[in-house]
Structures are given as structure tokens and as C-alpha cells.
Length: 381
Ligand SMILES: [Mg+2]
Image 1: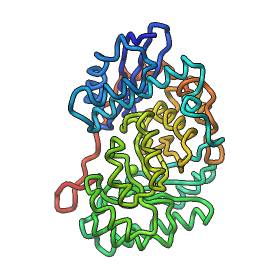
Image 2: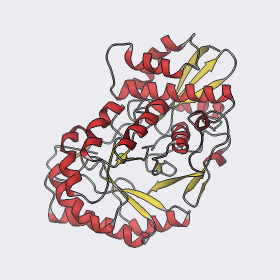
Image 3: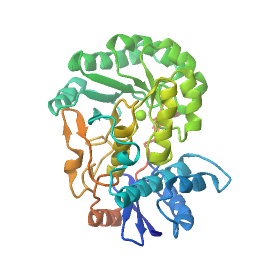
Image 4: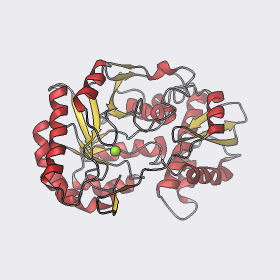
């Protein structure tokens, strides 16, 4: 079998899909994307295609090595995301060629179902209790919300109180048997993190995510030390090498994104690396159906897996949502906050190619929101 063509499709709401075609008619799909940089990643995918076309798609690890190392320069979100999407597509092809779901090729299932969580609120959650009630009604046992809007480098008492009140409201609405995770999206300074995290601990969040921006990894030991809440991070780390420092700092939940951190091949390795530190895997996935399908394949085959993010109804999904590009959306049916094991070969989904081609004609140039502090200076989004 040989790879004969690689196509890319930029589709709403803000996704990029790749389609890897073989001479035997087997087709694999992947989702290579950096949100807001779809065209940049797309260029990288087509540069990598120069090498892949003509190759045997089943030599996944060798292709991964060549794609990540052969241009001498390493890493970064654009290359790692391009490789990630192609890696997903190669695993999809392998599963179809061997007649097995990807998790079977990874050693077989280690659990019967995968717990997922749902986002509540947008960037600035307000009606926390109402949103949680609606999610609980749909069976979810865990939700995630943004912890704060843009925050001053040293927060006022009112800003701090507002965060605590929101988390308290979430806990009150959820009761003791469900979970809330708090995503700070890197909006909190180190000083604010030191003040806030002990105040949030009484409400027992599942984890606090990205309390600080990823480039402040050297500050994580002091943040871990001040927080009884498990610290989660990793959606903006792109290889196992970038997880060495955070894991040594005591991060207990790693969140690589299967469309950014080198795909199924690398996320699988990051999970094993985290296991050595007693940390668990909770893959980032605010993206589309291929990224979720790939994430679930890893989740079913990974012992130290915690919970999976998914984007159904998320505030980013304007125009199109998670199920719109699937022939059979039932594969992602959520029952009591869990997803059942996909039994189809490869990634276990069938992409509606016509829907993708139609959507790609319309396209959508999604851009990351630009936030500013009250004095006009740049603020983390
Ligand atoms: Mg996040």
C-alpha cells in the first residue's frame, strides 16, 4: 500500500481536516490545526506531504520520526500540529488495513467506557447554577468552566472574591458526587495563583487548569506547593520533552492535545511518561470529530486516563458543531457522562466527505479574541 494523495479542508467553526488517500482505496482522516492558524498548519501539512506521498502508510513510527526530525529544526505548535493530524490519519488507515479499532492496535481496551466532561458558560461564566443544571439533566457528571475573565496582575479583592463565588456556586449546584474543573486559561499571574488556589481548595475542584501561561513552567513548583487542588496543564506543550519540567514540578494532570502534540503516537507516550510521576491523562479537545475520535482511541488504551474533554455545544462552535461532519453521530452518543467504546476500524468514525467538501467551500477564518486590560495593555485571553 502506498500513499497517493493528501488533501486538506478548512471548515467551520475553526477546524482543519486532512484526508490521506492510498492506492488501495483506504482513506484516513486527521485533524491538524492550531486554532487561529489553520492556513499556516495547512502549509506545513502540504510540505510534509512531499515526503509522505509514495510511502507505505503503515510505517507510522518511522514517518513520525522523519516528520519531526528530518528538517533539522524541531518542535513548535505548527509542525507538531501538522504531524499530529497526519499521524491520526495514518493510524486511521492502519486500523482499516488490519480490520481493528486503533485502541486494539495499542494493546486493547483497559476500560469499558470513557468519562467525558462538558463546558459550561463562555469566556466569562455568569449563570453557573443554571448551566450546571442543564448539563446534569443531560447526564454529565463533570463540567469545566473558565475561572475568571481577564485579571489584573495583582487582582483586587473584588476580582478574587468573584472567582471564589463562581466556584462555590458550581460546587453548590453539583453536590458532592459530581466534579467541576476550573480552567484559568493562563489568565492568572503567579501572584494571583498563590492567593487564589488555597481559597478554591474548600470547593474541591477536580483540577485547576493552566493557572499560569505555559512559558512560566519554572514557576509551577511554587504553584503546586500552595495548592491542595491538583494542577493540570499541557494543552500548549507539544512533545514529551516539554512535559519533563511540569511533571517534575508536581503537575498531576497532563492535558496534551492530540491535534497539537504529535498525534496518537506522541500522546500515547506522554501518558506513559506521566504515569512515571503518578500523573493522569486528561486530553485537551475543544476541536472537531476526528480529534475527539483519536483522543478516545488513546483513552480506551491508556491505564492512567482520567477524563476526556469534548466540544459539543462549546462556545467556540459557532455555525457548525461536533456531529455535523459524521455519517453516524451515534458513535459519540453520551450516556450518563460517558462514551461507549467505538468498535469500528481505525478511528471508529465515518466522515461525511460531501459535508466536509461543501463546508470547505464556505470556509471560515476564525481568529483568537484579542483582550486588553482596563489600561489598554494586552491581556491573556
Ligand atoms: Mg484549557
